[in-house]
Length: 220
Length: 190
Image (cartoon, rainbow over all chains, first blue to last red; front, side, top):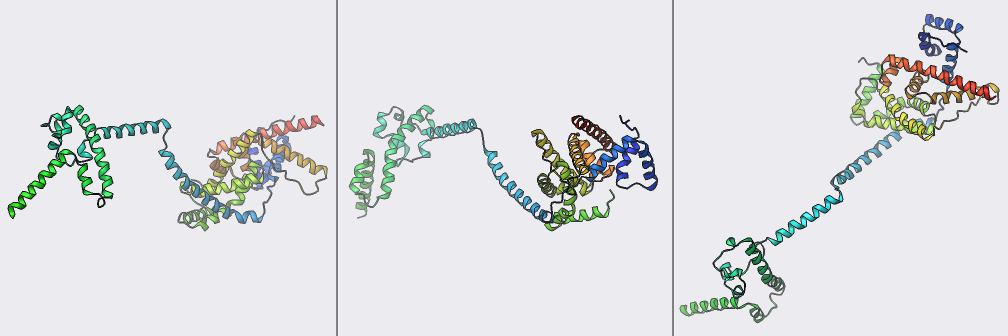
C-alpha cells in the first residue's frame, strides 16, 4: 500500500512542474522528491492524464458564428423583456375574483342609490314652476303634495322619495313623448298636441292667449 | 487595482460597448470564446451543453455589463458567469442521472492494448472527477486543465488563496482514492 505523502509544499508544485513553470532549482527539488515518493508519482500521472484530456475543436464555422449568435440572442431577450413588461402591467391590474365581484356589487349599489336619491331638478325639469306644479289636480290625490306651501328643501327624506317616485311616474311618459316629438315636430298636428296637454296646462295656455288678445285690443 | 495591457484593452472595449458600439462586444466574444468553451466543455463534458452555455455566458455578460465592478479582470468575471451557469446545468443533469459525456475517441492506433488501457483510464478519470464535490472539481479543473494560478482561482471562486489551495489538496487526495478504488474493483473483476 502506497504511503500518503505529507509534503504539501511539493504537492502544490506538481502542476507547475508538469507545465514546466518552475525555475531550475525548484524543478530539481521536485524531481528529487519524485524519485523517492510513490504517492507523488501517482498523483503526477493523474494530473498528466487530466492535462492531456483534449477538448475537441468544434470547428472554424462555430467560432465565426458565435458573435452573431450572441447578438441575436440579446435582441430576442430584449423583445421578450418588452412584451413581459406589458403583460406584467396587465397582470398588475388583475385582481382575484372575489375582489372583482365585490367591486361590481359596490358599483351597482352606488348607482342604484344615486338613481333612487336624484331629485327632479337633477333630471327632467318640469315645464311648470314648482309652486304651480304642486297645485295641480293630481296633487289633490297625493297626500304628500297637499303641502302646497312647502318647498322641496323642506320635505323629509320619506316625502322626497315619494315625490321622486310620483314625479318619475308622471314625467316619464311626458319625457318619452317629448323625445318622440322632437323627431316629428313639423309633422305633428297642432290639434293633437293640444289634446295631449293636461287640464292645468290648457288653462294656463288659454289665460295667456286671453291676455295677448286683450293687449292687442288695447293697442288697436 | 493595477491593470495589465489586456485588462486595459478589455476596459476600452467595454467602454465602447456601453456607448452603443456592438462591434466592440463582438471583439470581446472573439477574444474569450475559446478559453471559455474549453472551460465549459471540461465542466459539462459535451459539445451541445458547452456551446449553449458559451452563448448564455456572453449574453449574460452583455446584459449585465453595467454591473461589472472592475474589482477583478473582465476575464475573471466571464469565468465566474460561465462557472455559475455550468454548475446549474451540471447539478440539474446530475439529479436527473443524465450527465452526457462525449466519448473522445483516441484516433491514433485505437487497436493497441496501451491505447485501450489509456482510454479506459480516461473514462475512469472522468467518472472520478464527476464524483468530486463541486468546488474541488472546479478548482482542479482550473488548476490543471485551465492552467490557472492559485491567485486567479481564488479570484474566480471568490475565496482566499488558502481556501483555493485547500480545495486543490482535498481534490487530488479524493481523486487518488476514487481512482485507486476503481482500479482495485477493475482488477478484482478480471
